Image (tube, rainbow, N blue to C red; front, side):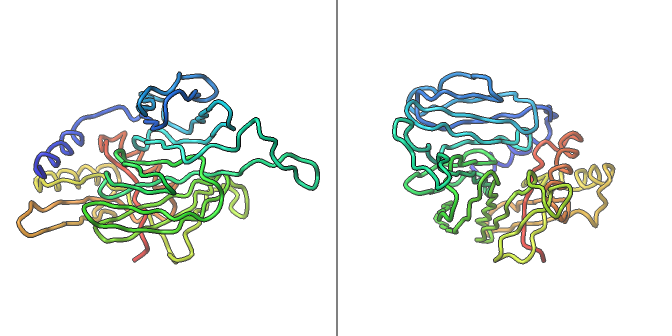
Length: 294
């Protein structure tokens, strides 16, 4: 089984696919109206099949999900970085219930944010509140999460990790789960916030992690013969060997697994840019991995 999985990864690595489009998988209850950039794309299917949006132009897109009798869930998703799996964390208050007013007479609504989860390995189980979610795609986005602190549990191959996550309004909280090293890293994306950073791109690391750096992972394979050609291809694209990190994972009785990364990179937005360049160059599985600084 392990050998088959690795071969499939190698096949994906070798196929030149378009970096100009991506897929979004929405896991939700049936009968919900779904909108992409203000345009209706249909109603979620029966039996919690949700909806699959394929071939979306790469970049940031607005998704809106409506449920009769409730305030809609609206959020932004970045398409093209990797396939994104969307789960609705919850809807706002019922529309037919009059919400409380503030002291100035303005109607108060529930403030929500999003949690974006990546993991190694990619597939794992996630628990948020009373929801148990099967993560199947590179990025899992939980949308409609009330602002505040939440506890998440992650499980893969009998390894269980948990972490408290602080969610902010309109600022995606990104969670990287590393089951191999039993570590959870958290950052808050402030790319849409104007402040001391004139470009609005400063990343805020979680206080418990004094420093976060980013690596672009381009290869994970059990085929050692792919390593040197890949490193040469990276060098030709402007990433010399001293900007490459080769990780070898060896378990007794198992085929060694090789991870090849580019970095370190100090900012997430720059790492995403590098990942895009590499995907255009043929490294179709390039994705960003945050790590605590060495």
